[in-house]
Image (tube, rainbow, N blue to C red):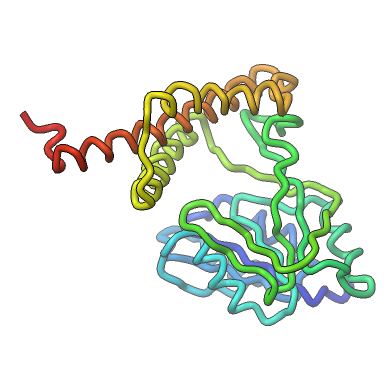
Length: 260
C-alpha cells in the first residue's frame, strides 16, 4: 500500500448520497485525512461518507464559504484540498497533486481547471477551463463571501494539470431551480450592499454574459450544449437583476408592491 500524502481533503455536503461516494473515492488513496462537513443531511450522505473512510463533522449552515473555512480550520494537515460533493478528482489531477509533494509543494496555493458534465457529456469549451484555487497551505488562505466563495491566498499561486470533474446539474429543471435560488440569494446580498437594478442591468448585462461565454470563451464549439449553457448564464444574470429590481421596488413602496 502506497503511503498517503500529508494532505487533508475538505468536502462540504448536505443530502448528497448520490455523489458523495464518488468524490471520496477519487481522493481516498492519496489523502491521509478526508473531512466531510455536513449541515444536516436527511439521506444516507453521512453513513456513506463514514463507510468510505471519511470523518463527518456537523456544522450549522451559514453559507458555503464559512462551511469550507470551518473544514479548513479543522484539518490536521498543513496542506488542504477542497472539493465539492458533486466533484471528482481525475487521475491526471491526482498525479499532479502527488508530484508537488515530491519533496514539498513549491507554492502556497494551486489552481485546478474544472470541467463540467452537462447533458450527458463534458463541456470542452463552455466554462472551461474554470480555474479555481483548491489546494493550498491552510494558514495562507481564507474563504470569504456568502453564496459564492472568494478565495484569498497570501502568496504565489501555481497551476496543476488534470481536470476536476464537476457534475453540477442533474437536469435542466434542476439547473433552472438553482438559477432561481441562487439568483434570489445573490440579489439579497447585492441589496444589502446598497446596489440598484436599472434597465441597463436587465438588458445589457444578460446580453454581455451570453456573448462572453458563447463567443469569447468559444462555447459555440460545444454545439447545442454550449448554446443552452450560455443561454442559462444569460438567464441567471437576468434573474439576479430582476430579483434585485423587485427588492428595490419593495423598499420604495414599503413592501406593499403586490397589494392592491
